[in-house]
Amino acid sequence: MNLKKFIRVAGLPMALASVMCFASCQKEAVTEVAPATPVSTAALEATTMNSLATTTTSTRTYKTTAPIYLSNAHDLTINGDLITGGSVACINLVKCKNIHITNCKLINSTDVGVKLFGCTNITIDYSLITNVSTGVYAISCTQVQVRNNQMRNMMGPMPRGQFVQFNQVYGANNRIANNQFENIAGQSRTEDAINLWKCNGSPTDPIAVIANSIRGGGPSSSGGGINLGEQGGSYQTASYNTLVNPGQYGVGISGGTNIKLLNNLIYSESLPYSNVGIVYWNQSGLPCGGNTVSGNKVNFKSGRLGGAQNDNYIGPGNTAPTGWSSNTWRAPISSYILPSALITYN
Image 1 (tube, rainbow, N blue to C red):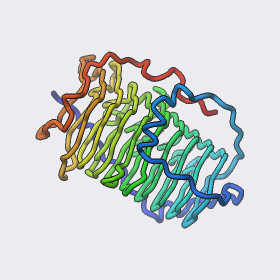
Image 2: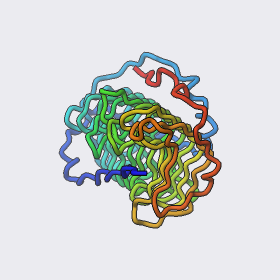
Image 3: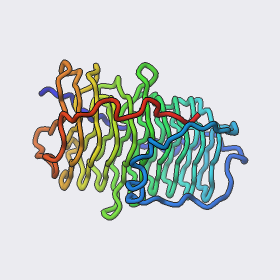
Image 4: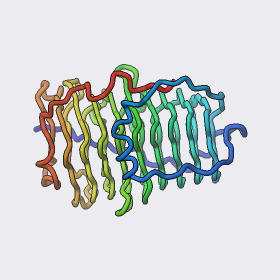
């Protein structure tokens, strides 16, 4: 099979000097409160499986705020802000800790919705992020939780274009969980929906990508759904995610050790850019092993192969990971695994 290499080189961290130029935030944008309480992987898996059934539309009010830039700030909440980014990140945090971003609406930026550099214990939740280059981009951070958000139409261009990218994120208590993500064809220019680049979780608490709903990808010929282990890394798990028409591929492990893809639902109709459901292919040139791909259900049509079924691919020189035979190929699933309305925040 002539499979185009599905991993693209992600963006390297921006130089600190390049993010220092952004305007500082208005004083009323932040208030001092206790940081958000971390949520364990076990708790998320126990409570988010039926979350879509209980999602409701509500009218929310915001205060209009200029783009926020904070350096070395701590123990703050950014709550209820409507921020139009323009040419800068809507929220840009450098070397901050114990920050909670909640109930915000971040829109219309050629830069990132939330950009984090060298931060610790940052929670982003219950926010709407739309029409930005990337939703959340965390560089050299730890204890980052992105959960219960809704995002629509990531604009790129490459190397941006993710809903969430973790770049050299490390340690315990890092989560991307229970978010609802949608790219609308002709209105977006996405790469990977979720990407972990050179990230290393903890042996006792891997970086967890849990119970996210993802619909829409393309037209990129390299981007897709959830990509773990890009350029190596370790201790990462993607479980119970649901993906419909996510792009060139569904989910993948492209390198690294102790990485798991568990119990995900992956569907794609035949689209001009669709290719393969699950990819296991070490492209990092670094050690790769101890990985598991188990319990996933896949029904993926490849437009690049004339509409043929193409549920899985193991790259040259790689052997099947643990659990490979437990996956369901040609699974009886369709686009209806996701509800018609994913984005309900106003």
